[in-house]
Image 1 (tube, rainbow, N blue to C red):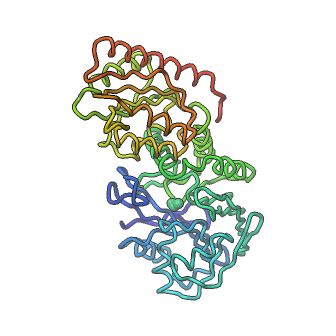
Image 2 (image 1 turned 90 degrees about the vertical axis):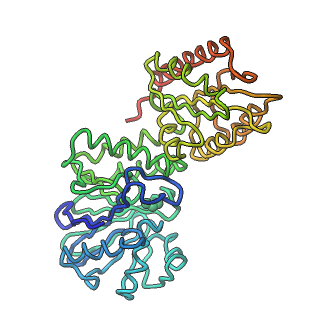
Image 3 (image 1 turned 60 degrees about the vertical axis):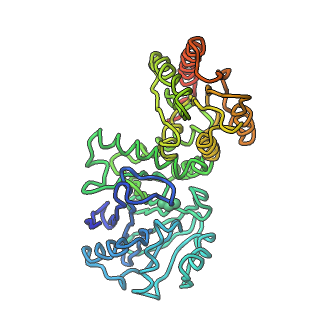
Length: 417
Ligand code: FEO
């Protein structure tokens, strides 16, 4: 857990703690196969502010306090604690901090204030701020605040250092992925940046996707600022090319309505291998069109992986049998979550086996209608028991048709960033 403090820019320092790969489920739900970093920032003028913190898990606040030591900072030196966002992965350390000090001043949003008491019984001197407010740390260092509500909690705000152009937006523009020695984009290779881009998609789809409209509004607000560095609460700090992560987020936020990438996610589940017989021919047909396919078997694939694939896929295929006159239950759970996370307007296709009367299709139609997913389905192929040669051929054809439609939709989509 031990990490070193690094200097973001003159007078701003990054402190961080990692949750190691697969050490926990983020938010108690989402696997983190590559871990996640939680970043905190010390901003020094004549006065000292700490912007966000780390979670309160065993050993994590201690990591933060060790990093204070590395900087030669004592808890008493901190004049302001700025809480952009109250989810405990950033605010949990306050529980320990208040044991060290009980007289610190907190800067947070109006909606954030009551959460301090609710989570940590903190009723200190709290100053609430809103868009347009600022805090003068002295030595020419003025912090400006901007509300970015619902990215992804209602109380969220961003802190902007007007002296250096450093934006500290907490969850916005964050990514999963633990970080060891090199937390800056200017220290990373193309492959490493690509890795963090994938981790940003995982983060966006798992944590933020339900709030695409607020993300778009936040991006608009950020575009009006003279941003030179983006220092988020998770992931790498963008100081060589801060607009890369903004533009990435702009694209991710557009995938709720616009076509995403030239990719198809195939979700399948099978009780005794009947539905499974059609999976390989279907995947081959899609790949033959040059379209990338992500395949997830349910319930084995974690929902976090399914969401990550589905978010960037313009096409979704569901292979599932009827189970007790309804949908195969893990498929229901996955699709229900995709819909709640606003995986909308996809080109879709379903195939699967049944034994007696069927019923999966009826429940699928009801689920799609309930969530208003806007998925445009090709005609379903259902078969009694095992698929015959004609069924397999039909499913192949649907795969080809779906892939071609996906390519057309992506080609005709408006350029986002
Ligand atoms: Fe990283 Fe919403 O907390």
